[in-house]
Amino acid sequence: MNSVKALGNWLRNLNREFHGDPLLLSRESAALLTVSVLDLLMTYVLLQQGFHFYESNPLARWFFVRWNMAGMVAFKFLLISLAIVVCEVVERRRPSLGRKVLGFGTVAASAVVAYSLLLFYQHVVLVPG
Image (cartoon, rainbow, N blue to C red; front, side, top):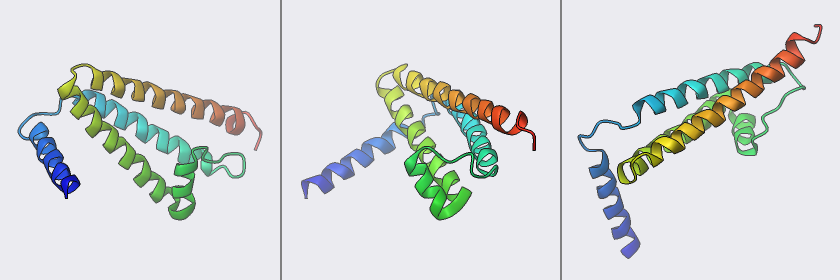
């Protein structure tokens, strides 16, 4: 019973965190969302090429195998949404830390997009069809 009460208190505190306050990380969140859309597009393009490419993240691959790209999109944006909410809460409690974490996530996702572009160029553009 104490765990139910603790969960209720946590949810009330979380509601107070966001009630009436603007998002602190709106630019960083938009950047992460943009890069995530690019990542999804590159993943789709590469997976459409056939046997050369596969989703290397086992959890994302599980969603892809069961629900195709719709599952991949749902999985990706569930994680992105969770990351944004967690970083907003962290930013309110420890200023600049949430911003740094979201910035790191954006840089990491950008590196994945760059790597996907490199794979596309090497295996699709340079290889005669």
